[in-house]
Image 1: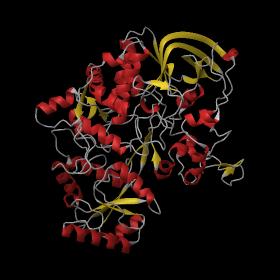
Image 2: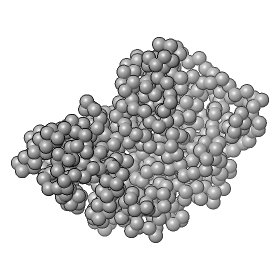
Image 3: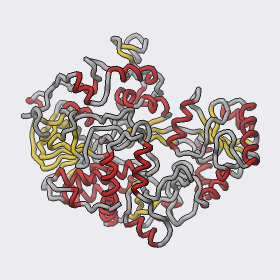
Image 4: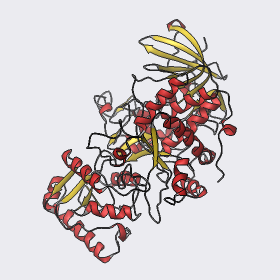
Length: 606
């Protein structure tokens, strides 16, 4: 049986994997400040509590922030080979898909449609919905075009969209991947839409995106929902007992794709974990050895393998090495299923000769979710002082609050605050996640009554505090009252002046804080996905350290690299992460099944 054997990687090969020993040492100080998540509890910070083990810098979570052996990190070192006697059986298939999330489902369906006779999809989790989130981006889709025809939305110039995306990334992206998305995402979304409507779903175009003169998002973001639940979708609030999971979002889309896979003769095997890719030397990848229980292994031989396993943020060592600032800035990490994003297939691909993307630090999807809605109100830090122009996207707010002496930050408004937000949104000002509403459709209005329910829920859960005076509000926030009152006085003065002399905020989105009750919403930076991954090309092939394709190995979704620049997810195109799962999932599936996605999928002429 062929199995990848442990390799002694040279220093040159290590550099090809996307890291250096010096870089590892440089991040040690920041990594040591990283907050612990629930998955970190109980881990030692060193053999004697000194924060180091055998001379290796160690973060509080116990994750190494430096190289472990010969300039390599632990995740780059293959474990001992699985003994042949432990492999109980072998079986054959045409395509093996590792991961049953959105990207994996799209890859599976595309491979089946391309004529693959046997496609096996495996997932290490117990049977569940491997999905999270709501927004899916696609350019020039039939949903969007229907609204363009009605005069309800203006189609963007996609050349400008991609150019701004590259600028956001400071050029640290593989541009052909971005242009491939621009050319193919509309057709791939329409393909997904046709599949979904057969399962009783519909899709709307999101209108809650950010609209501003210097920072503008684009109307390219879609939301799937149950066709008979439109009103529940657009009136959604987290505190009314319906929404994600039973009405709209990827949590209703992915189960529909599971049904589609079954209809087309595919198979999803749960609680089946890939342990090692099968590759003989520098030959093609020919399958994977998977575990189905303790010391129970099966070798699945496949003509092609598609990695669709998600990101690596639950592996503390990888996370804190590849994005130390994110590790510090985040207040919580959210994934579904929880803590399953351990980078298993990044590691197994590396052991088989694959390379990680060159650009570091890796981009992160980090929004102000799971706390209070931030809106565009006055923001104050841990000391009750204003610290930024609040007229920015949710990613920027997540990071800039962490640059303060302490990370705590709040959004402040008074009894007129939500009415101000509605006026701003209906006038086409501001918006975006945690300012505009999550499910606001093009052609609809900002739903003030739903947002009042959101506020009530935030207060009940302690995410927002309410008070009849600024002194009382400051006490509940735990900030100095004198500082908060001075900050509010200055902000109100600037509102009256009609010009923000301190931070340059647009006066159109400024509102005085003067009439009780007063509200302070806690800003919580929530890490959703790490976006760094394996080197790839527009055919979704995994590349080695010399940028050469590894035959038989493909990747899509968050496991794929080179699509985002350093540091931040580009919210110019909300839902681009899920959009690339659909687009490159389909491309990977077609190509892995022996087809030619480039000719099969129509290209948008931009």
